[in-house]
Every structure is written in structure tokens, then in C-alpha cells.
Length: 445
Ligand code: BGC
Image (cartoon, rainbow, N blue to C red; front, side, top):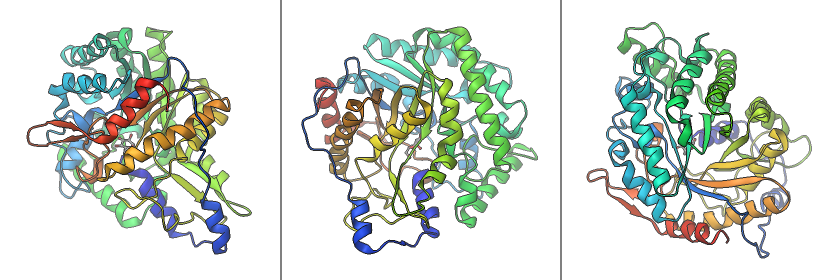
């Protein structure tokens, strides 16, 4: 939920002196970018932009994270508040997608709105999302719907969240109800967003950060009058093995529930994937891949597709993570922005999951839009090389349509193709939006 990649990079770097001599290190890091002509993308390629409910809707007051934003102490830089007011302004957002000539919009359902109390489902809220799905269809946009993007209902978190033995079946019940109302119009569904890093961050991150997150969740428990609270996505997870096992079971049960409603609806899961590269003898790369993605990529073998969400590469020696080259372009958090990482992550995802890939997120948090405008075509060029090698990639969805609530960092980090005025909610296209639009319209670089 926070910028996990940056957190992981920081953590890995703690133990990571470079064992390689300088020239070898420089050579290892300067992987060449393809320069040859890149013909058109496959016919019917999906071109999209993404948002997630809590990050853009605003006033998602029944969600676990809303509570965590508003207790004391809190690890959140600021509350989400009105966000982009997309709960009201979703038509504006769809017009932006259409205006860019994109054929796909990825957005998420807010479980906390749909099931505000255990077993109490809101038809009005389901109708809200149905209108969004129909709004996509009216504009010729395929709705790619995430059933759960990090936030869970307060009541779910307050009974232990994904630790609770009933969590998988509760998630499946929600998926069933949502699918019965909505599945007819959805083009592709994903169950969970980036569950693969759950429970790993606590082992890797600096103790004080994890302790602060634990204190925030304890404050949320007190606010609810509960003796426990476990958010849908957090740094501190009391029992990582149980949490992860229940999320995998939840994914499978959720997928089965959606499929039972509409068997022909493609269902997958979106995973957070770095492009892990190996340098030198005995690189930790393969062990890290197994740790971060192994069990989820194997779980995805039974899905219709796997969603890859990539923002960075990581270069592993035998000791740990190597630092980025000194001339690297960097995002707001100081991490390297490297265009080849998307194709690398996609190749690995397909090699293990063996199902078609959809890039469900890729982008950069930066105030310098020239970096975004450079990254998009450069990353797509490499992605096309992977497609030409035979990796089945069905689409590319950019994160994000608009600047939004970037979890722990609040509104400080900007991933949008559009800016957001937080007073008027006006969205304004950045130059990079036209770059993506041109590629999408031509279906070619
Ligand atoms: C998440 C988004 C987040 C983005 C940028 C992904 O981890 O799915 O919710 O805003 O990356 O950090």
C-alpha cells in the first residue's frame, strides 16, 4: 500500500554492500535498450489507465484505511478526505479515458461501501458501480474491475481481517454478491491487488516503521472498541503465514464465486513485480523471486491471466541489492526509473504463471512529467520486444489516470497522467497523457 517498492529497496539496501568491482558493476547495470523498429502491437491490444476506489473516490469512511488515517498515532501523512471526488465525478474520469483514446479503464470496487455491515449488502452502492460499468460501455471502454484494492471494511479488519479463519469465505460471499450484480458488464476481473508482498514487509523493513504501523492498527482497534485490527494492506502483519494462506484461499474462492456467476469472464490477480536481475556468482535473485512472487505466480497458473504491476528493477548480487547507477533517472522517492523493468517483470511472470499477462499497472511517481513522457514509450518498446519473443501480453494499463491519494504518503507523490486540483477537483492533462494517447490511437510506437 505505501510505496512498497521503495520500502523494499531501502530494506534490501541495508544489507547490501556491493561485492563487485566498479567496472563490473557498471556493466551489469547498463543493460542496453532496444533501438530497432517496433511494429504495431497485437490487434485488440488493451490500452488503459487505472485508479483504485479509496485513492480517488473520497470519503470512504467505512474502510479500514480511513480509520487508520484518522486515529492517533497514525503513520499516514494526511487523511484521504475527498480524494479526487471520483465517487461523484466518475463520468468526468471516464471522459478523460475516452478523450485519450484508451479502450480500457481499470478501477476497483469498494467492499466497505458494498458490504457496510457483515452480510448487509447495499443495492444502491452496487448500482453505483453498475452505472460506472455501463458508463464505460457507453463510451466504448472495457471495464477492468478489481474486486479488492487493499482496503477492507472496518468490521472485517476489526475481527482480524485476513487472519480470521472465515476471511476467505467472507471475501467469496462479497465476490458472489458483487458479481451477481455486476459481472454481466465487466470485461475482466481481478480479485486482489498485490497480495504477494503481504506479510513480507514486516520482516524486511526498519523496525521503527513497522512498530509505528503496528501502533496505528492498535489505535484503530481501540477506536473500534475491538481487541484486534488487521488492515487489508499494512506493514505490520501479526501472523504472515496465516494472512498469506487466507489471501490465497480468498483469491481462489473469490475467483470461483465470480466464475460461478459468469464462467466466461476472465479472472486473474494483480501482482507487484520488480524486474529482478542477477549479477555475479551466487546472486540472491532467484531466492528473492521465489520469496516475493513464487507462491502467487503458481496460484495464478489456474487463472485466465496474471496482472503484472511494475515500477522498478532490482539488481541482486550474492550479498543483497546493488545501488542504482549514479546517473539514473529517479522518482520522487529517489528510486531508479528504468524502462526495461516492465518487460523483465512480464517475462518472469509469464515464465512461471504460464498464462497471458496484462500489465495492470506501470508508471512513475514524479513531479517531472518529462520522465513519465520518456518512460512510457521506452518501456513499451521493450514490452513489444517481449511480445515479439512470444510472451502473450494482452494489454498495458498505466497507473494512474489522475494524481491521487498515495497511501502513507498522502497527496505528496504524483503518479497521474492528469493533475488534480484538490479544491476544485479539476483534472488537467499532463503532456505525458498525449504521449500515451498517441501510442494507443496508433496501436504502435
Ligand atoms: C498500488 C497503487 C499505488 C501504486 C503506486 C501499487 O502498489 O496498486 O495503489 O498507488 O502502486 O505506488
